[in-house]
Image (cartoon, rainbow, N blue to C red; front, top):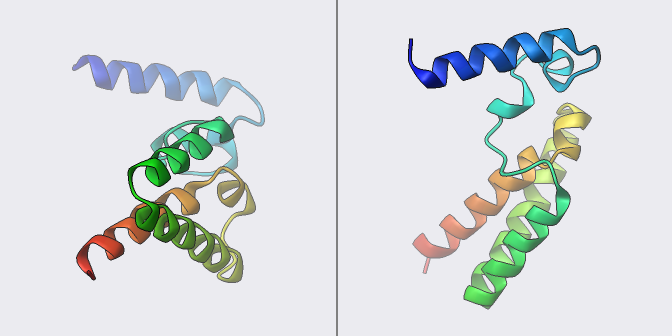
Length: 103
């Protein structure tokens, strides 16, 4: 068994013991969502870094964040996942990618 597999099993058993844990709230579990951090300041610092690199990329990242979050609300996504920034993070990445490839 690989070290990563053992760590994942330990996290699964720990999450299963905690009532109301994020893994209980959503079948996929929060740690598998691909978001960078649980702290909102991390997302803000991420956006600031993008704006410092390129004003254009910062604007498209912000637009992607807004569009993805709005789409998640309109399509009835789980409010907990929206609040955790899952859809916004993906929207930021999509906005930057579109900006790069549509120049």
